[in-house]
Amino acid sequence: MTKKDANVLNTVYVIGAGASKEAKLPTGAELKEKIIRALDIRHDFHKQISGDYIITEALRIHKADINQYFESAHQIRDALPLAISIDNYIDTRRDDDRIALCGKLAIVRSILEAEQKSHLHFESSNKDSNIPFRNLEKTWYTPFFQLLTENCTKSDLQERFKSVTLIIFNYDRCIEHFIYYALQKYYRLPVHEAAELVKAITIYHPYGDVGTLPWLMQQTGTNRNMKMEFGNEPHPAQLLGLSKNIKTFTEGTDPQSSEISEIRRRMSIANRVVFLGFAFHPMNVQIITPEHVDDAKLVKIFATTLGISDSDEGVIKGQIKESLPNTNSVNMKKISCFEFFGEYWRSLSFC
Image 1: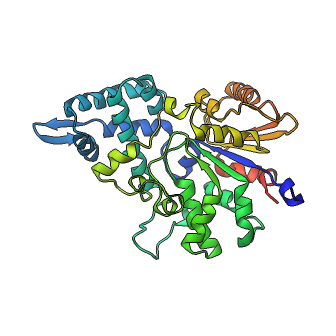
Image 2: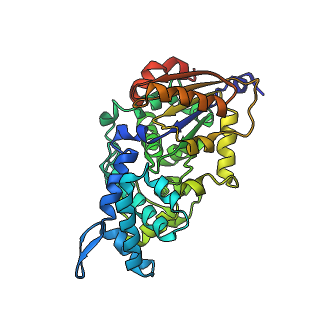
Image 3: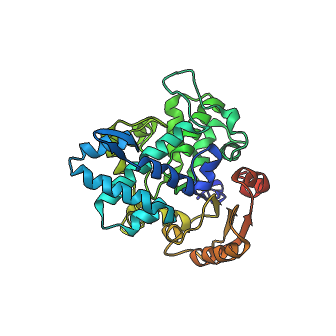
């Protein structure tokens, strides 16, 4: 191991819905509202008068008794105000395949629509268009990119990126999308080089996502049926295919999953773990808890806790220390993800 290798700070970022909120993506509560509207599928004779039309057509393609699926959609619609989240509700009804399908269709439809309305969206069909980066100056995406690229030439980026892991508990593709276009703009990189660099960052979506971005698919050889442009509207058959990429809590926490094993391994070798907009739900904490840690290797924890009470902060600190007993320090602040980078810039620097 070279001296340079020995000094690499392996950093894991654990991303929750509160982080995507800064780019106008929905929180868990807001996603519930979107899903309730999407699954409020009602007809006046043969004419659909409410609910999402693409979901209805996807269910027709599914070739089942569609009235049974409408009933399942209405069960979700009526119960969701009582649920912690759509994920929790689907998991509590894990033996009902119709509930799972309707819920997953609504998740994909709602998140793609949210991507389209976000600060990160632009019309990719226009080759001269790009993300409106000025709209993101007060979000965490900009300082995160600045931190990743601080004092880093183009030739050094790949080694820097290899030391970063992103565990994204959201279904959206905001981070990948942002870094890809930011690299092209900042370093004047061709598209294939930018895509290769994004691939150097280890990225996990434990609960799946709403499709593979086309430029990333070319790098990974992903199934073509999983391809989905950022914020595009899917056709019904495409929506049905993309729904298979969404995982329930039970599916996402399967200990036999190779991705879960890799997530836990990455946590076990981290020097720093950063939680952004993460709510610390016990099942999500379970996913990232390594089976073994090196007690001789101390890890520093940083977390945003905006909206979390002082009492719950104490509980969360206990969760963290139980999951990572080699924790050296836990630094928490009730601030936004954007403000967080200003507060801990030097602590999170790679330089």
